[in-house]
Image 1 (tube, rainbow, N blue to C red):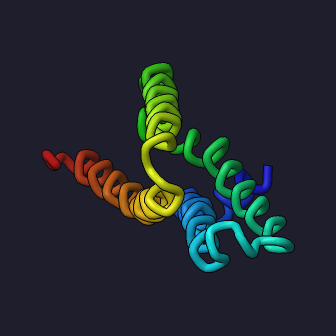
Image 2 (cartoon, one colour):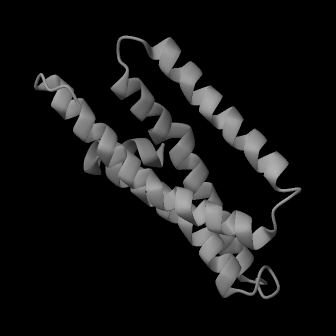
Length: 134
């Protein structure tokens, strides 16, 4: 509910960026705290970061799918579910072949791309609304 309130007040893009930043901070902590060796009390912070990221995904990002595809919400949510399932499957299979630091770098990269992808989608949507072809 907190993310919904924030989305109305500051916009969904800001909330999405907060969630992506939370996911970005988890692998940063992985590297800064010696690959899980020195987490101790920081573990609570990592759980909080994961919680903020997940809450953003469960509310704001699904709401964005509905906003971007208002006339076809069933297809939008199907696409959202497909993307989530593919990401979980890829992570599951890659975790057996890639090391923790490599997976952490992938997570850093993808979480950094999330706000940029949102901005690109907003730009494309505005262009199409004005009659552009992008």
